[in-house]
Image (cartoon, rainbow, N blue to C red):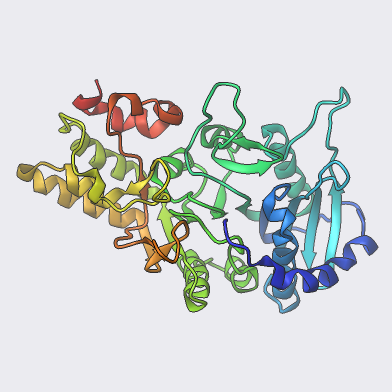
Amino acid sequence: MERLICYISILFSFVALSSCGDKDEPGPVLTETDRTVLVYMVADNSLGTWSCDDADIAEMLTAAKAGGLAGGRLVVYHGRPRTEINPPQLLDITPSGVVTLKTYPTATADGDKIYSVDPARIREVLSDTKTFAPAGEYAIVFWSHSSGWLGPVGKDDYRYRAFGDDRGHHITIQTLASTLAGEKFSFIYFDCCQMANVESAYELRHLTPVIVGSPTELGIDGMRYDLNVPVFFSPVPDLEQAARNTYEDYAGNNLECQMTVIRTEGLERLASATRDIMVRLEDYPEGVGSLQRYCRPTETCWSYDMKQYMELITPQDSKELLAEWEKAFDKVVTYAASTPTAIGGSALSPFYINTCNGLGMYVIKGPEEISYRQYDSLAWWNDVVSVAPAYK
């Protein structure tokens, strides 16, 4: 999220959230519902400084008061700005206001800091959500900064990892997947940047049938919760509609946005079809500069349009492989939309999106790039990309 718009909603959000102080930690609420949606909000970063967390919770309240929960439960883990004096809380968004279910410690008994991206904290919140808001099924929204599959620069480097920003600490996509192992979510929605890439989706494929995210940077307002909360609590959530709501809200206000819906059931077939093409890649690809990039033009690009890449590297005498690959791809990406430009350009030099098939993929252009940001530790590398003779 990279756009300074949140201020518009701040005044309203402070009024809407005033009920928190009146309803603090009443104890477990154990009535089971059909669906509980957990918004995992990591906001001790620039987004919290700009009060985007408060603005989004206010939108959730608007939806709840309008009947958008449809009898379900909307729970928010709120990792608040200035965590040391505003410890994280688990909130219940109800038609009558916000109820604080639990307040979390910010350090261990030994004085070690606890971060919202720590695996133990994530598992604790999931367990608490099931205790306070038991349901027939669960879904999760991840809210924060993010950067796709990118691993740390060094072994002990906590910067620039895949999801979350809690006082400079993040979690890799592999660790997030292992932390959530065994969980089943009816959907995962990434209300953050650059998570619609095949590497991240492949790591998370066993957790959910559908992932929603953006292949590029997303504006700091993220999605409109007052529009999407009712969709999340429909008898059968229409995630294409949720993605469309986000896209159309940005596009209708002349703002940049790219959105994608990924159906994970087809990822194994897509992996197999991609492997059939990669095994014919004898040399490092040429013509990469012609591909649509999903990273800012001024940055090292780790995500290009996957479909364009497969078209580029498929041998001329193997077009039947590309046709099979396209069939597999169309089963995975069921919605993709883009405005003409993306965040990261300027008035004089816009970041144009000429092609958006919705799913990003890393392109290895030389031997030194195989291990870039620990790419060679990803399941997608091991299961798919590593078969290419060019990379042996």
